[in-house]
Length: 182
Image 1 (tube, helix red, strand yellow):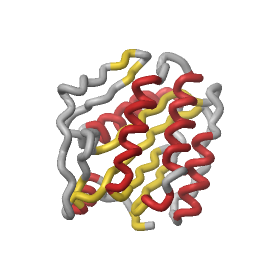
Image 2 (tube, helix red, strand yellow):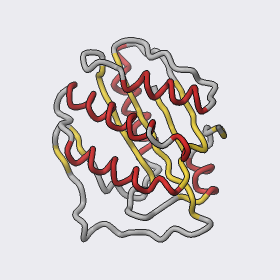
Image 3 (tube, rainbow, N blue to C red):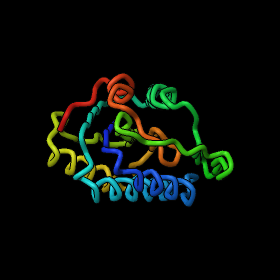
Image 4 (cartoon, rainbow, N blue to C red):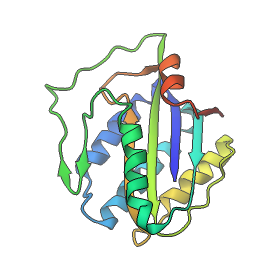
């Protein structure tokens, strides 16, 4: 499953929350991944007034091609980033220090933050692909409830990642052409 959400730039606190979740997370086991998924979906569910755009895609893939499909989707999303400031893979946290973090300046033309959740699970994830705000809420609740025993892989990717940075409307539409207005 893949959920992408375009949020108003007022969601800058969410960037901090996601960075904190990633920095504290134990990604070396399914329980840690489930905690990240639950904390991320809760953070998003607490700010529905900031949701502007969304896209939900689900699919069933044969097990022998699941990893390569997940990696391809991950690479596609990560390639949209100019830099990866916060990473936590298999329990290895590689966040850049505060000296490396270059805050950006938001202005009237820079107004969005995009978040992508990529989830691989052992069972089918049933999400509504035509979206309203209520359907997005239900999709996030469904994802947050996936048990650790069913969760195989998870990536939370947000852009931009730098403190205070945002995307312009043009950057959002160009990088995330499948987003639909809520």
